[in-house]
Length: 297
Figure 1 (tube, rainbow, N blue to C red):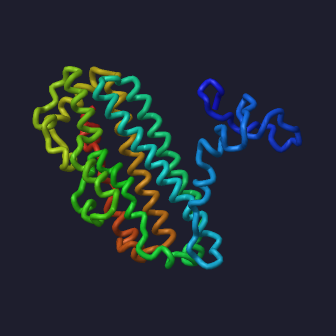
Figure 2: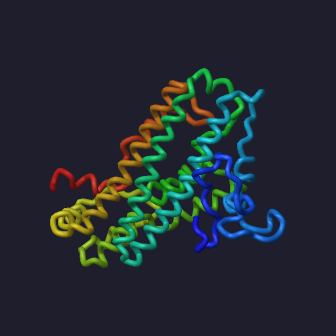
Figure 3: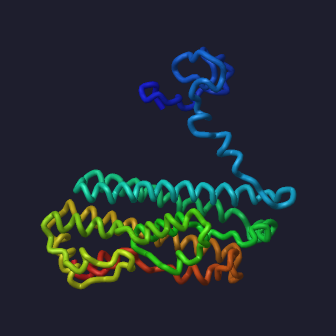
């Protein structure tokens, strides 16, 4: 972080060498006047103390591996927040016909998805026996209840009233899910952009009920074949949507295998069917038309 933006410098690579700083710790590149707390620091900007206070194991001891479990899932929720932030930005860029920046932002989302998948490797270092040392403390808590992941599904067109019904009325997340349920999806923004680019997107697709899941359309697939054969720029954007779809499916698959590896066929916490439920979410593309045209290209 640079002085020009008014934010604190990143930690110096030479820390720990024994050298004495020329200015107060955390004061940035300029010496700040006043008592500690009166100037912006790295820890203050990132709310580090508050962040590090949020890992509260419930097991007795506590059990060693519960810390890993908490940290991994909190990190997932932070990444889900960022992915939603970026998906919403892509929608705005498509609405503004800024295809270059939309393509760039899609690449960022895809990079984050790779990190999400890689983090499962860390979680899989925990053996089934280690997980069982604190599993009962989770009670009804379950990743199944992650409203941010539900929001992501809704933003990509995988909407469900049943998913909304799982949240009680007092849950703050319920309002967010209902808003996402009523809003057009990333796919709808893409189709509207495609129409403005001069392609004959079927009226039924442009005026579809955005609360419904995206269903394949033979008429739309004709248009997409035309795009792939004649428009390299839009083809690249289509391919990034395919990458996003594939990346999400890859995360689902790895998640299923991680659950099977950890609890086998046992029911999941929070009343879910565990791995059995998760297997039912596999191989269901968010953008079926982009997959449907493959054999015709």
